[in-house]
Image (tube, rainbow over all chains, first blue to last red):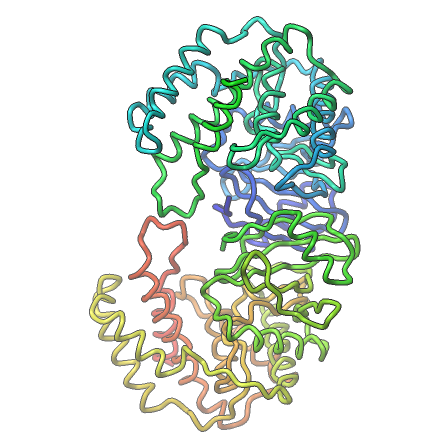
Length: 312
Length: 312
């Protein structure tokens, strides 16, 4: 959420000369995305996002992410296209970091999506899933059931520092999901993190699906479950909005839809999605100093969402 | 250098409706400037910088800074103009913070200015000083001789933690300047911090003078001294470039120029400028944890510059 690596204008000028994109007009470091350095770069021809990949994103995964975004942009999805240089390369090195020049997409992220926005987001996810039917690269989900088990162990009894009883709830939920997780449902490439932060809109039109750095191969309907947990609740997780949830489903049904098996397992998938974010937030909370400049996200906002699906 | 206050798209939409600037297309938090939250905002009509003023900038000084920028923009200087709403107000409140929508200027900041850039920067400073002859608002320089004395006391013997003998050098230089500071030279509004960071260029043309948050009333030629200490040396202060220094003077002479008294006192003014940045960097170094996310600027880069002017 900050700029970790600085790029002097002279270095940027020289970097841009590898491409057919015009010459540098302006560049601003932007506070966005996971722990990468991002710049909004304007040339005489267009605007771009320049990303320098910092340590959190594994360099070995970068070709996968770039291929995925290119695949989706090629199929007309509003996904920022990695730009290739004159020799056809998208992945570069700049200031000693892996780097990529990426298409700039207009639009803003919403704080409070309306049902109309939810419908558009559900429809965009379905279009993305349809466009991914012929994407054949595979990346394991590091935050799958086995990943949740590792995180739960790493948090252990210390979870109770956040809320009394939290460690027991996590253990209980994990045991339930180990028994009931619907591994036989269709797998596909999924975004796995399509929060409102990662969807750009203008009016009620989706203009961008961004931040694919959790994308992986997993149960396809789990992607829709993540969408529900992040779009259909108030930020603190205390209120579930049935109208937003219905709009997400209607949008998804219009462009892709769930099978009867997927629909039957949906509540379990949503519980898994809640546990995934509950665990990463709990882990981050326990391992981030309270006075760090990074904002810690409240784990309890996902405990409340989990309670909703457990009661349903 | 980060975004401290978030602005949801809905709040930004409603904020922009106070102005005649079109409607929101995109907004990105940018990592720039002193400790304020800055956003690059695009509307259907133009691009703007939106600044939310955080604690480091005193709210009482904001009308001064906005009047100064408006004065310079009115006189054709490439200074970002504060935008007024339909009721003529530039200073607003957004997310509980003082806020201002400001003109976006193209251009980039240089890492290594050439003599041609130095000439352009010197000329732009002279144009700014000429345009400020009829600006009559006054703001005391918090970092004047009395401010340096306070900083030197606050650092005290701990300066030697950075380099042995630094505390003694600071005390000696301060004593010299207390005796020799040329207070009778003409005073004016000055930028007081016109580092390469704060000048936007395209090619060798100056397209922006930015970041006026140290602007104040002080010895006018001191502004040119700050320009010299920041443009005419290598970043580490070890090398002085005579060609860049000559170009700064030639540019300034073309648009404003120094009187004989100012030229005679220039070496002392440059020593004062070096001490000012040596002191603020020393203070920040001693008071910023080594592991903070903020980059500490090297005080010794200004000790070396000071040595250059003491030897001259």
